[in-house]
Image (cartoon, rainbow, N blue to C red; front, side, top):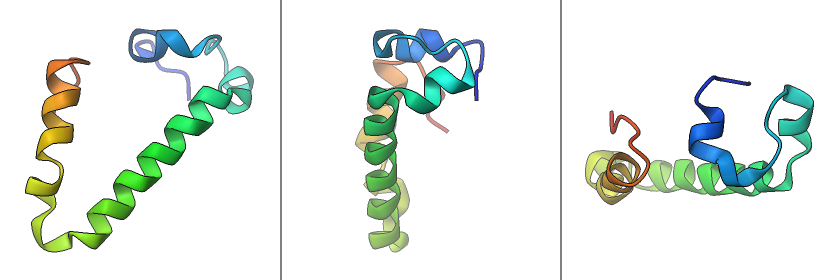
Length: 69
């Protein structure tokens, strides 16, 4: 649950220093809902996932410096 780069990406979420804090954090829970909605979007667009996620991939790569793959 706790990776060294967690604070880098989610520093604005507050205390993320251990698994208990992460599991109880409402901002983490809200982000989890967003992630699940993204997975739902993939399920609805199984025939074109690459294009479905293109803008999200660019956002994560450009703004958050996350590997787009």
